[in-house]
Image 1 (tube, rainbow, N blue to C red):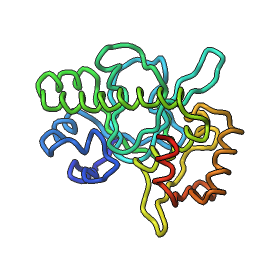
Image 2 (spheres, helix red, strand yellow):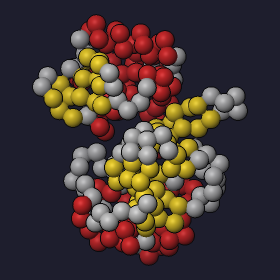
Image 3 (cartoon, helix red, strand yellow):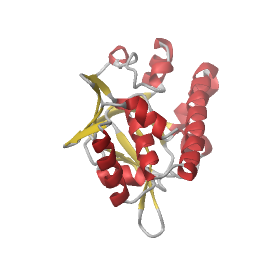
Image 4 (cartoon, one colour):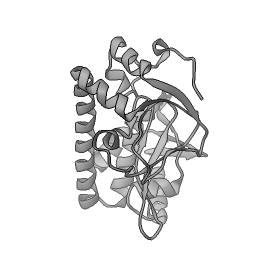
Length: 233
């Protein structure tokens, strides 16, 4: 469903913004002119693994889970994306099928740009292509860092690393710390941290006992972010 929301209303100054926040008004307008606005309900797939790479999706509001499925049917969580992030850009560039499924964790609004129009825009706008290259470079570095974490950290350290990442992207300051509204389940957190649900539960219990975090339904309050960073460094 198309939206009438204007380019100027995009939260370009939001600290959580990634790709959109790096663009100037002219670049935003160029994207907007070539795309359509859509809304997705919580639980709805924005696109499916193995699907045709026909469009690029840029998140305007809401958060999304990116996951793949093994041959045995197990879901592997790859990332969580939020406002300003771009999805599907690799498939749009190389023409290969989607490598993952993107699912709305809450109601999502997005801008969709057809893959041919997006590629043509990159050809005409080297400045936009450079921003995309910077995004891909950051993701490559993040992937390298996560592989090091999986090899070097125990399950507590990996859970700390994922909580720190959520803080850096989505946390809101509150008295005594920062607060994360958890749109993901403990199972998804465990999968993202490459550990069992039991191990993730024990890690969260330990962090609560240490006083570093406080949990309630769908909310985690971080009281000692520096300690979490040190534990996963």
